[in-house]
Image 1 (spheres, rainbow, N blue to C red):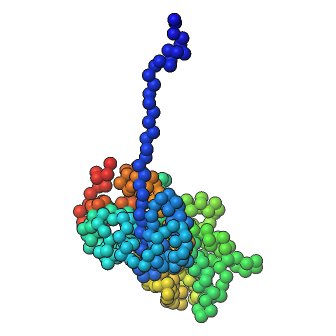
Image 2 (spheres, helix red, strand yellow):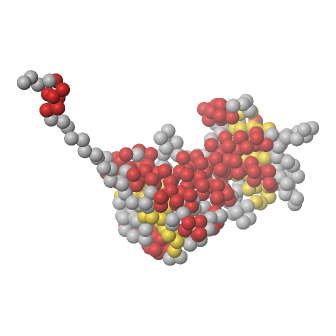
Image 3 (cartoon, helix red, strand yellow):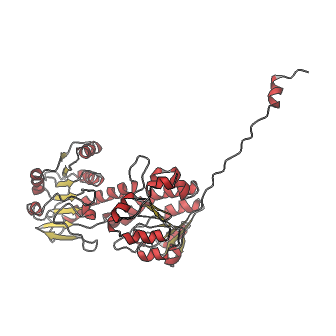
Length: 397
């Protein structure tokens, strides 16, 4: 009996296809209350916690941690979080999320091999901070170092957007100050000359300050020493505005006429001082300076650090607002922003089977690691504090 082609095909051995199971990881995240001065934000909103608990992860929140961002304990509890008043219990979780860096007291309470995700704020740290983390073999990520797919820093960019927008709103508020303000509306009303705003710096802060000021109808002038940044700003605003590189004569002329000056400069180590005290003396009486660059020293010579409780001072008849960490003033918006950035990364870490696997797969996440099981992996930190460091690519590959 002849074998038909169909029957012959049936007799051939077939490959067995087996399903490859991805080993997911279950996260146990602790969110302690922020204790740093003026810090009002929280890393995860109740909606973000709900997303994590729905995927089978545990989240423990210290009681009252979200109050300054207008989130109560019940909202976190309803989202599936465990609420406790025991700070030590929260700090005992295998993964910790904080906005501000851990304090030395908190480092003493955490367990060895803990994963810490927080800001690093390098210029406010000391060598003993990193040495204390190294002794406990901590793996630490700075969320301002984490990169997106396009190579940008999403946390830095997002908080800069808030600071830029807020700087104009703060200036508008200060101009109506009955004691010393000029009583001007920041904007453009028919028959009334528009407010003049000078913006120093064409980065993200400067761009969002410009967008907000233009939206209110103000006249703006933007100064920066980078033609590339000025060109990008023009393109992003989609309209022609006054832009200039920083020349003392043209800057002084603009400052003499302006009602508001916003400092949004950045430097490698310290922000460059581009406005001298003499130039401030030539500004209008009752004009407003908002120095967003005060976090890195300030770009006005007359700037001095102020607080959210007492945010302004008057010098040379000019109102100065020099509060570091402006996004903390808008704590709920800033918390939503940080939460939106961190939640996808956390879910990805779990999906990849833990942080070890995740940083192998995700270069942007790997860029955020500055300590790996107690080994310093940031060259910048090593050089800054004269500490030995190793290339993370030689450790994790």
